[in-house]
Amino acid sequence: MNWIESIRNYSPYNEQEKKDKEMILSCIDKFDDILTRDNGLVHVTSSAFVVNKNKDKVLMVHHNIYNSWSWTGGHADGEENLLSVALREAKEETGIKNLHPIIKDIFSLDILPVVRHVRKGEYISAHLHLSVAYLVEGDENEELIVKTDENSGVKWISVDEIDTYSNEAHMKKVYSKIIYKMQQLEY
Image 1 (cartoon, rainbow, N blue to C red):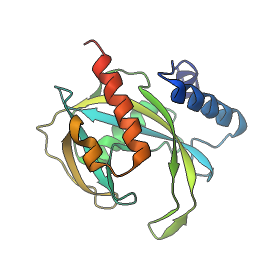
Image 2: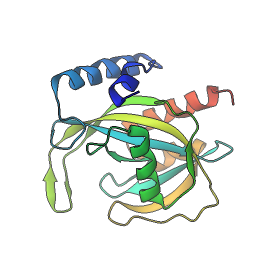
Image 3: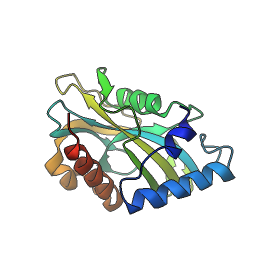
Image 4: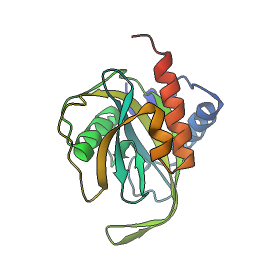
């Protein structure tokens, strides 16, 4: 199944995901460059919500641009296999090697605002990320490595403490949704 079909086939969890899915599909129809940053207004990103085996901790990075603890992820940059993007970004940003999807399908669909910022000396205008996220398990005993050009910290954070670490109100809602959905799964 290609990336567009995986979004079309995604069953929205709530009203927010229903509306965001509609908007994402509308953007797919309107733009032919949303898999790349060539589209400065809106583009696809893929993230991994990495949990430990007990599913009581989340692997997070302290993001340099947002100055907040956040999930791992990044731009598709033309790659159509969004699960592969999420796994690659998680590995690059944390140093963790042993990751596997708990579910291979999309686990969360969100449209996320990005405030204007400077990245690598270049001004980036405010824009939107069409965020596709996956639920992934990682080994919390592996050595963690900081990717200094993107983050200033990497650590496992208790799911009960994410709100204490994240200072982005819109992301707290995303994390809360994912945690709730994860806790409803039967393994």
